[in-house]
Image: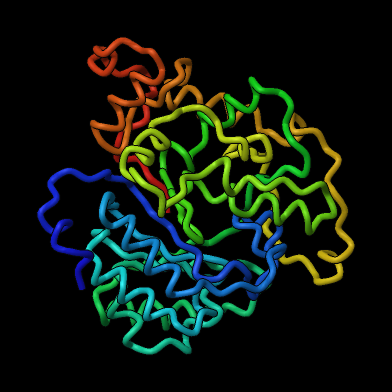
Length: 340
């Protein structure tokens, strides 16, 4: 399957590290501090027609190292293999990864494992996932030459804020130390929009469920996929190092740690808004460490997905063109750094 003759001969495209897609937005678990807010999201299964249209448009201007299917719990989607097969045929990614909590893994057919390159298996205490689920996944991955990664999740980090962070300097520091934005570079797309992280399309829905004033950040923090000049608009968006509006409701990857546990249904129903201040939820020791490791202190991270975006970011920031030639600082984050 090809996206058209024009794309086949295209020499220059935007290159990103990771592109993610949520096959479902709900989950069969209720993890406290779920980074995807799944316990709070209504049931929603991704529409294949919309997905196909979005991916075809993105495939004309963009390539990624890894295409990652997540959720929610992606194994709940009844047409999962159709999505996997379309990405495989598109050639947009070098690698296809599926992320799962493993609860449904033993029900999956061999054809699923033929369509992926890597399986990230997140195991949580207090869930139905047992050693038999892990062994099944390991065996199937070995049988079909799929890379297997087991993630024992004992601790999550506080991430979502119920009220906006009014301290702009703290927002800036959180954003420039954020592993999602600058290490994993986990971009997502959803219903015709492209985002630099998973927060913009879901923050408003989360706040509404919590009984708080709704703020729709899905438009102001993203790029419309089906409007003219997509390539140039995406380049400017990716290169812009200013925090998103959604960053005011997020602690990035420096929130305080919490012991992983499953919330009860009644706990979800009666949960009220968290009244704690953002500064009370930040792990400032971790923040300082991440700032040092990233060589923070300027407005730009030291590495970019590709040279074109790096040059554009330099121009947008008003920095000198020869900045990229400066020697690396102590603690500089290497270009290959990434997450699981």
